[in-house]
Length: 156
Image (cartoon, rainbow, N blue to C red; front, side, top):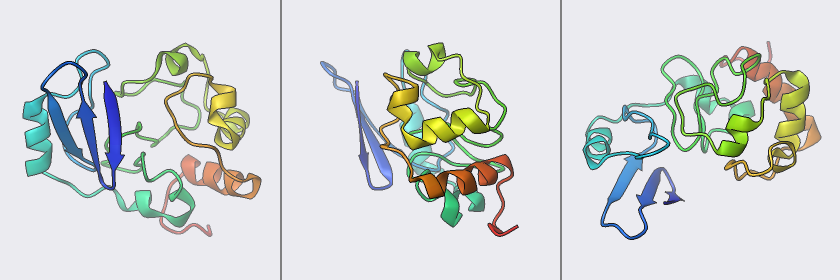
């Protein structure tokens, strides 16, 4: 299965099959299962009942993450898992189809682990599906503080 991200939509193509689904980010659609993936019925439902991501998702400090993740009350998994309450949580513990590499990582998202992961995800979890080259050093600590308690006032 291949997933392509097109602006604010993701298209999932299943090799050898006729199943094509279009999923709008920020929808009410349930997360795809790790085995069967989204159904055409869920795709239709997600297109018909779009919702807006929580305002916290649009905070400046969260911008590098917002392409794939949401955070805050009412956040939904999109092309990445929800990051609400991630600090202190074990990796791959939400309703999201994580890679086997992430599932087996045994990580707990504390400050040290997040700092390393956000600098270069593929070095910390080889085989992760998180296709992100990493953040600059000066971007990491403000993001970790935001992840601890997301709010719209990034200065306090």
